[in-house]
Length: 241
Image (cartoon, rainbow, N blue to C red; front, side, top):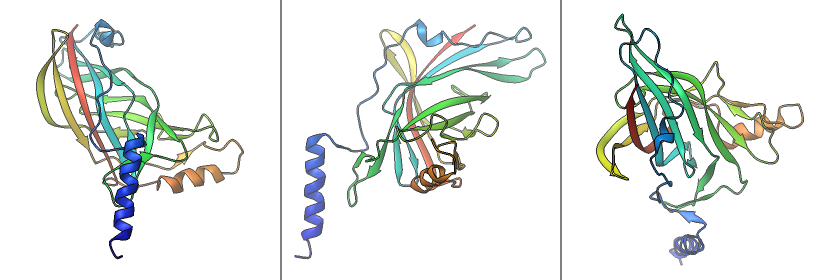
């Protein structure tokens, strides 16, 4: 009898997986077809730049772990930036755009490596705040803010702001050449566990702060560097301007 709870948990996990309600860490890549549209949002070359390269980086698959809660990058997410050197030798970077849909919030199924969709149906949308620093292949860091979406939340439920952004610093673990549609590009794996998250604000449809408190309690906000982790797989293209 002492093994019964474990057997029940395993059985429940198998049933959920069969019904398609649970997902293991590995999953299918987001749909992506390379085209010239990848470079549509490239920032213009500064007048005093002697070199300028546009980078289009598209997340194929990935997760953002906020404590025990997981945000699945299950909708295409594309970051377009450009960087180069000015005539005085200074390295600079500019944001073009960060585009993508809302992402699914998941919670762990106890006793298993599986995650299931959060029962509240909360989603997350990531938006750029404008800050970007030049790096190798892709920006060394860039600023974002998270917007939580739900019918019971206001449309201004933000974590991070334009002036106080969440600074993501993707560390490249591996980069390999890849051929898609006869176009050569890089497939890049990055991780970042250095970013902290502030409190959510503006979430209540009714003033008073109770909804903000509920959101912050649900996601354990604010938190510290090391409490979160972003693991993303990208394809990166570049174009000299």
